[in-house]
Length: 236
Image (cartoon, rainbow, N blue to C red):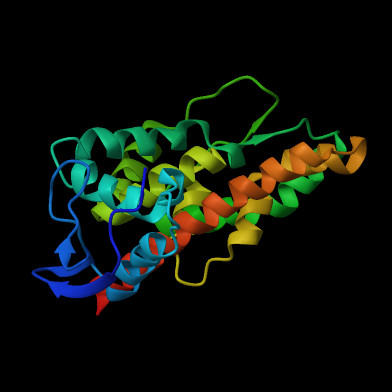
């Protein structure tokens, strides 16, 4: 697609901030006003437009796509279905599934994962079952209900970020930790990628695997950044 605009700007709008192309406000894919909670997020989205060349790279609008999802889906009738989809990760959370206790990997998992899981249990007043081996064991119904409540209480922009964070990490505990103000994307991604990194340490990895890992880390960090910028606007 050819670039069809010259100037990109940001202005305050009813309920937040919006990006303008040649003075015209952008709408979402669902034709809703694309108004986001903070100026910082609007400016970051504007940069996606401003950095385009003569040809528009439609894959370079990850912040815009997250904002559209928040406004078109997470703010609409599908909100409850989305909350249930995200909360379902609690039943198969990566941090709950460990190697057998006599395997070296188990020690690494316990060192990295157990403090994170214990902190989540304390923060959300929930109890997670730890499972050794590959057989699935359902989490207690009260835990699933509690975690659904935690997810459902999030705002639309946090839900959009959580959808991406849970998909990348296969962990609701890690995804929720990523929303905390002092969260470290690299540390959280190392926890999410622990088993893959363990395999690479012992068996080696190739350039393609390393590139994929970095691509996924970049997406994880971007979702965290999106949530942080949106949250800052809502707290202002």
